Amino acid sequence: MAKLIYTAITSLDGYVVDADGRFDWAAPDAEVHAFVNELERPVGTYLLGRRMYEVLRYWETALEEDDLHPVAQEYARIWAAADKVVYSGTLAVAETARTRVERTFEPERVRDLKARSDLDLSVGGPHLAASALRAGLVDEVQQFLAPAVVGGGTAIFPDGLRLGLELLDERRFAGGFVYLRYAVATGP
Image 1: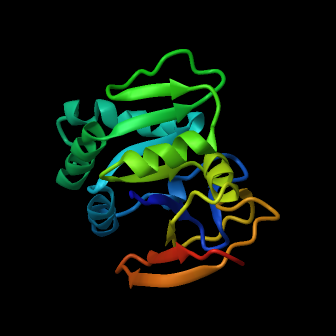
Image 2: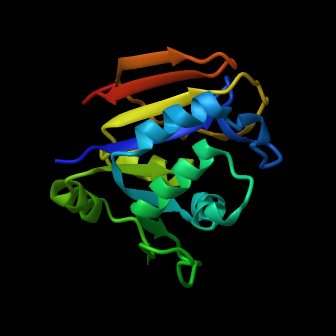
C-alpha cells in the first residue's frame, strides 16, 4: 500500500503563509530544492486543494522559461510525470495535464487510491491536509522549517488536532532550513 505524505515549507513558528498570504520568505535555495526533488520523485499522485493547485500549476509551463535553474527544471519534469487530484467546489476545469477535479474530499476514495497505488501520494495545502489528517489518512509529515518567524498566517496544522509522531529523519541545510520527517503514530 502506498503512503500518503504531507509535506510543507513553514516558518519557524509554523505558518505556511503569513498574515498577508505571502510565502516569499519560504523560497528554497538550490540545495533545499534538490532535496525536495528527491523526496517528490517517488510520488505518483498529488492531492491538492484549489489554492495550492493554483500556486503549483506554474510548474506546468515552467520549462518554457529560458533561464530556469536546472534544479527547477528537474522539479518541473517531476510535476509533469505525476497525476494530480484537485479538490475544489469552485474550479470548473483543470488547466494542467494529468489532472482531475473532485468536488469533495471523500476519505474512503483516498483510502482506496492508497490501496491501489504502487507509488506514494502527497497531500498539499494545509486545509486539505487537515481533512486527511483528521480522517487518519496521513502516514508521514515532512516539514521544512524556513529560517523566518512571521508572527501569524495559515498554520501547517489546524487548531484542535492532536497527533502522535515518531521522528524518522532530520537534516540541516547551509542556508538555515531544517527538514523534519515524522511517521504519524496511531494515537496522540
